[in-house]
Length: 252
Ligand code: 13P
Image (tube, rainbow, N blue to C red):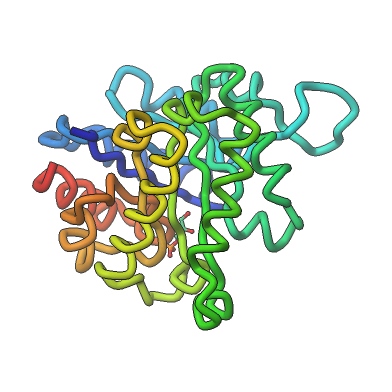
């Protein structure tokens, strides 16, 4: 049985005072012990997240990591630095980074490796654009993105990762994938993993991301191959994020 994981991705949003209020409202909540919960904050707020969430059972982490270990890489943040502030997770390969920063599948794979090297769980984001879906390329796109990770990390190390299927057309648009669309791609991804290692495929958590909200969370979280959610906009509103977490806890 895969334990559900609900992750809030704040993206480039937040401010000290506002974060304090949001973080406080998370851990005072009871009744969510059957799911794993995490928030991914902008790097400057990692210390704040650590200060407020340590010892609460909630996890925190980052949204990106350098593919280098250390050195003259202005503006980049190393995995070891994320670990210094207790990060449990980091996303890699979010579509906003693939698009805006031209991150290739190979760079994303190296980032996942750097996170794993220090014991941080990479949440590897995959997903097709609207035009790729319309051309019927969804499977080939996510297969290519997944293959780059497996090639570098090796199949058995995939057990230490989390995947997040985030169709680009569903991110921030209010238009979530339907339950059928999400289940179909999640099952396909698990099948692809299974071709390398059946046991790892059975254990691998695959999150869904893209316009997850309280109104669609119950249906999405109940799908057999959906093991949680990567939540953007709704993770900035405590009541919405907690409602999504409760939806996952109910079906867990
Ligand atoms: P939204 O939930 O705002 O659509 O964002 C999804 C996302 O990109 C999470 O990483």
